[in-house]
Image 1: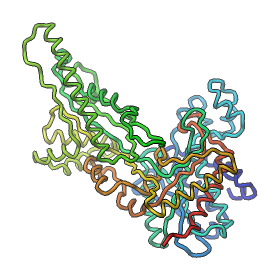
Image 2: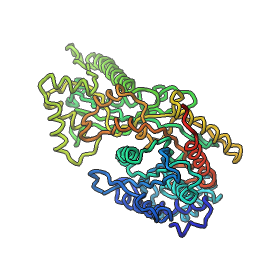
Image 3: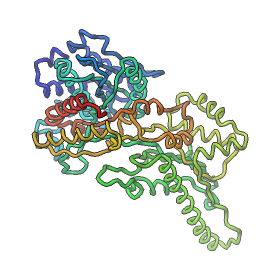
Length: 555
């Protein structure tokens, strides 16, 4: 690669590398994630500095990963020995290509897609962008191979201008970002090892993940000083089955699930209230009953879970919020069925007492404690369930653990169990009360102001990167007491899934997202805006890097 780009201006280098990376299909959960790691490593090794120092490029294979996926690292040492270090990081996987439909075979061909969209009359915006020649199309072009290319271009620049770098630069690329973030989580151990063995101080981590307009006509280029957190808020709803000929005698879990869904799904009234920030409501990712075939029996159970963003809200507050939604739904069901039963009994002349429609709401932690009190070995049942379902995905195994505990305790009363399931992304942001973080924030303000004056780009700074990112695993603002609330209500924690909470706290690296700019990530119209992403952004990242490395800590 180096021979192809060595005489190009940086802007062209970044575009050329982006095109090269887009050409490697690296869909999450496929062998392509191995292929893209190999390509990234090969590109770095082609740079003259790393040809001379091959030991400063290496990979870290993910433990127990059947595909053999790996993290890729490169370390550029300062000419003058120092502990001061900045990290560049990005992810290498993409979502799938099925959304391209009839032109899926061209999903990795930017030139074909540009020509295609020039004649695409069903969307005026994408047609105009294609005709301009300023946009690069293709799966992963925006999310986030262009961001990786910017990091590689800057790595090449600094490897050839080491006098401008007053510290060390560590670059890492991680797989498995598009679902469970295992690459970034495993990289935590490697970052701690490097810090210990090389006596490093990590001053800042810069993610190049994409930014996009937040509304139609939005002109801003956003920079984010932290990462939104995420929990998967889950509901196990046990109803009371009945024959449809006695439908009002039962408790329909799908009714409760629907009520919870209406209360939470895309409802801004339940979102956090932080003026000026991009705050998103919960969104439903799964809603099903437990029936696997048709009969005339109502459903016995229903499963429901939500993407639940964390900004400033604590995990404890989030759990209580989910509980309230379930409590309200169950109360509404009781009121509704009493009213319907009154109409029903009046119509057919029944004088019997109405059924009991009360439904208990509890957290998983409470449910597990109640099971223990009834003599159930929760840990043994959990382990057995996991062993019996070795290939079950994280979310499904959580429900199976609850079902197994329910059976062991013979507890089939109507109830809603509220719990968390993978993935869990901690939230973080630059804090003014921490000197090092405040200095990063102030430096960023100066760089954005300068870049705005010089380029005419309209910048806006926000705290929380809204799209979920690997940066969540480099620092966390949740306290130990707050994370305890998560662990107690997370079936299978430490067996099926966990995150290195204590080690993330050990790292505690301030994070920024200074991302490439584009539109329609995760769609077939995905595209990156070249003039800003390859022309303006790389220089801003270098200014931030040099500023952080040059600033002396206050006594």
